[in-house]
Image 1 (cartoon, one colour):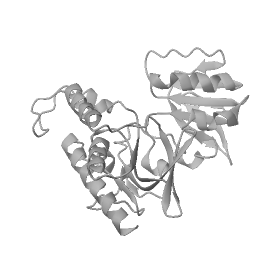
Image 2 (tube, one colour; image 1 turned 180 degrees about the vertical axis):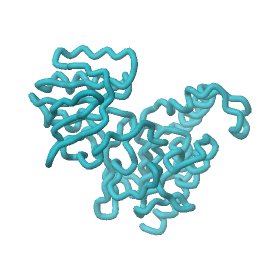
Image 3 (cartoon, one colour; image 1 turned 90 degrees about the horizontal axis):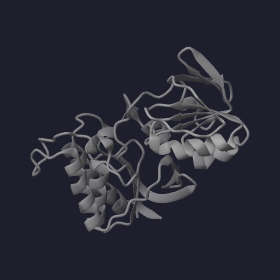
Image 4 (spheres, helix red, strand yellow; image 1 turned 120 degrees about the vertical axis):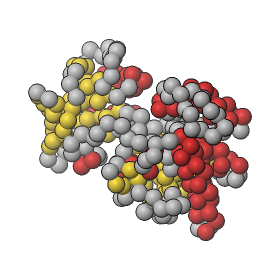
Amino acid sequence: MYDVAIIGSGPAGISAAINLKILGKNFIWLSSRASSKKVNQAPLIKNYPGLPDVTGSELAWTFQNHIDGMNIRICEKVVTGVYDTDGKFTLLAGEEQYEAKTVILCTGAETGKSLENEDSFVGRGVSYCATCDGFLYRDKIIGVLCTDKKFEHEVEFLADLSKKAYIFPMYQGYEIKSQKAEIILKNPVKISGGMKIEKVHYKGGEVQVDGLFILKGAISPATLVHGLATDGGHIMVKRDLSTNIAGIFAAGDCTGAPYQYAKSVGEGNVAAHSAVEYLSKHK
């Protein structure tokens, strides 16, 4: 079991990992190795202390060089659920499960709105993990909402095991080759059904499905952690960056504006120290 699990590889996650390494804690860092797109795509950053007029790609390189120099490793998994289990936390990521005494959420600000009724159908036909739940829909009709080209191998995996797959690519230049896939170039807006999902609605039409997979880089905090207090999509935190769930902390853009790199780095530092203090009080 780990002392801390960090979720997210933006500036807040990087800062939390660096500080936990210095503090000698046993932690797992679950995210993509690549820094957030927000950092990489920034043309010029003028307010990061010590690095005036740095580009996003330069800052991302600096972050990566720092964690590589400290031999900090990232477990490249997308976490799809965090569950409080008898005083510890179980994290689901693909086919793997991890246990930690505390969690630091550094998931960034959620981009794009959730579908209407999305949260209410999680576990009742809505899934965020192809490898976790795909086998449940073998020879069934599914919908797949894909937000990034990097998930296309998962889209094809799902389509190939299904009876039929309706694919909603939310980006340009898609290359989905499965013969069972029907591409719909309209944005889904709503999910409907009874005890389980039955239909995906989009502007001008609808399709009947047995399940819907939503493939994206991050899941909304309220969906990721049941019972987590949020306000306007942001995680509600106290001064020490603790949440309403004891042992779970949050840092960075997911806690709200201002969306600044320096603010995220500072919060990652505070969250790491707060998690360590929590551990010392709950041995």
